[in-house]
Image (cartoon, rainbow, N blue to C red):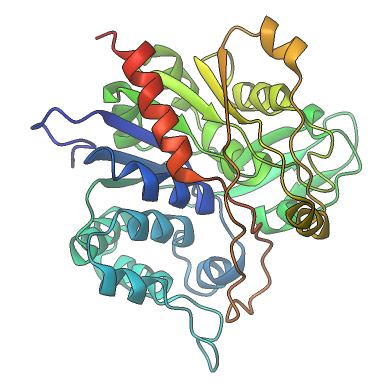
Length: 343
């Protein structure tokens, strides 16, 4: 089995847990601070280009893995190629990287080998680790009602009629955690839970059997970078503390040492654009945070909004609101230097 971290060098070992844009953004910044990065990736995605390839070819989801590979690549031209999205024809809406990863899985018969080969092509500095290698689908159920939602794409687009904090999140069939993911958590100096959709990006990874236990047993500094904004119809009104509580609920108990949250307010212009997405700055509940078992660190973490892909014609919901990843990365490194050197 490939090792999650290199056995040589004194760089800080960082395991980044999440999926999609949140992981991409954090990895793109953290790679300037260490060469020892392991990205543990959510494997429940079934929307957009990834969903079409899964449904038509029976392969594992490639989209979030592709984004992490691209973030860690040292080859700008190949990175651009992997991120290229076709605008028309049969491949319209598909990214080249998704298609290549799917082809590599077909050729090798192994998604792990596909990721390893793509890592060589992209000259990746770090390791990208699927959280599980089982072919799973996400299910969200409210036990006290008859409401059951099937599939990441469906859940992501749903306006919840009931409190999601009362819902049970599961993967079907029940997966086995990738041993390499468990090893990365055990060996890391810092574990970062990235920002992302609670119920379709972070939850599906943290609920995998063994992940929560690994987080509690790890001696790493464990930090959650809280979402900048709430999500209309799902987490509207959720505070920073509410987000952190859900993260730990998914993992089966307390494990966080720190929660980083944004204290910066957007300009009126930017706030108006947020409102168009039904998003509002995540409120800070200081009374709750002061009583929490974890510590908190506030910062000016608002970044610029991204632009939508004009070729992304396959329906998928995607927030354009971003952290200032460099500010977050510096805060994480300062935090480790001050509080985390305990081994």
